[in-house]
Image 1 (tube, helix red, strand yellow):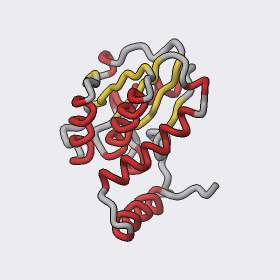
Image 2 (image 1 turned 30 degrees about the vertical axis):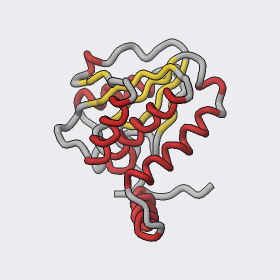
Image 3 (image 1 turned 30 degrees about the horizontal axis):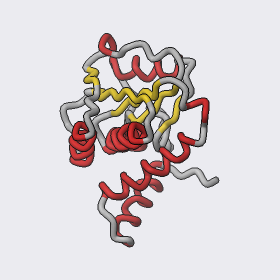
Length: 169
C-alpha cells in the first residue's frame, strides 16, 4: 500500500477528474462506494449503529454519500453534520440534498453539547476534515475529535483521521 501526502491525494483527484473525465461529484460517489464496500466486509462494524460524523467540506460530502449508501444496504445509520464553519462546499450541499431525498436528516451539531453519546455497538465514520485541514483543530471541534479518539468504537477515517496532517509543515 502506498501512503500519499495530502498534496499528492489532491493532485490525484485533480488528475482523475481531468483525465477520465469525471465530475467531482461522480468521483465522490465512486470513492464512497469503495469505502462502503470495505465497511461491509467488516462484520464487527455492522453490529449496532454506524455514526457518520460529517464536516461541511468535501470530506463531509464523502461522509454523506457513505451514510446514504450504508442506509441503502439496510444498516442503521445516524448522520451528524458538524457546523464548524458557515462555508459549505458545493459537493457537500448536493450530497446533503441527496441524503435528505432518501429520508435521512442529519443531526446538526453546533457545539460539543449537541453531540450525543457515541457508545454502544457499531462504528464511527470520521468524515470531518480529511486532507484539507491546514491547522490544528480548535474549540468544540477539537473536543469532538477527542471524543472520537476516546471512543471504544472502531473508527473508519475517510482520507485521513481528522486532525492528522498528511504534509510536513
